Amino acid sequence: MVAVSLKCSVQKNPLIIGHRGAKGHIAENTLPSISKAMALGVDGIEIDVFVCKTGELVVFHDKSLDRLTDGVGLIEELTLEEIQKLTVLGKYKIPTLVEVLDLIEAKVFLNIELKGSKTAKPTDELLKKYFQQGDWRPEHIIISSFKWEELQQFRKLNTAVPIAVLINNDPLEALPMAQSLDAIAINPNFKSLNETNTKIIQEAGFKVFPYTINETEDIKKMMQLSVDAIITDYPDRVDQVLSH
Image 1 (spheres, one colour):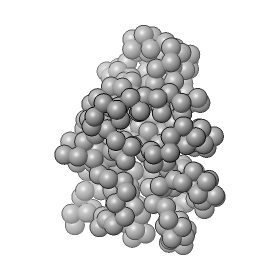
Image 2: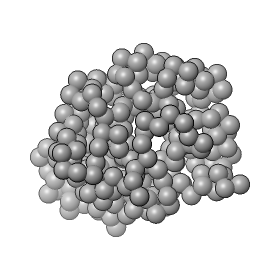
Image 3: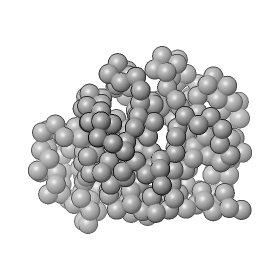
Image 4: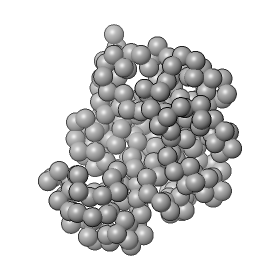
């Protein structure tokens, strides 16, 4: 099993991207959740990263620890040792990006969302080490963020890894930034998409990777729009729609 090439221009069905692993099944952004998504046959995994106090990249969505863990405060203010003592939903550990890359082994592609500030440089440095070591190649990675300044910083450091521009409002507002970054995709909130803006984005040369599509009717709507990928908490639901 080898990761789907993101450079392939023709595809019959949308790619299936597991949101924070398989968030609908197992606690988000944990190694078991990522393993579950892979077992469900996803083409790619989406995760979030912060830089912790000691400089390591940790995989977690919230700036605050309060919602998901038995800790409190900000994840960026803790050392890796302190983070490793926490549990997510009373059961799971917060992984590092190293652990995620080692688990996936380039068997599916990985969408790394730069969630925290100052994440571009350490992410680039870590990825370049993995590219030198073997299985991972630039086309197996997508870097995305709502923090467009992080995307700009990453692109200055790395011209090979694909970039996707995250946006929560009018997706057409992301077009100038996507063009300046030589991005591969725009990742909009699926609720903002319609036939017109989807077509405009695709005709401008970008893929459309909307998030987070969980209900069967919404999955069907996105497929009718011919989006290029579906980011979902429930990869199995997309499979069910595709098989009917």
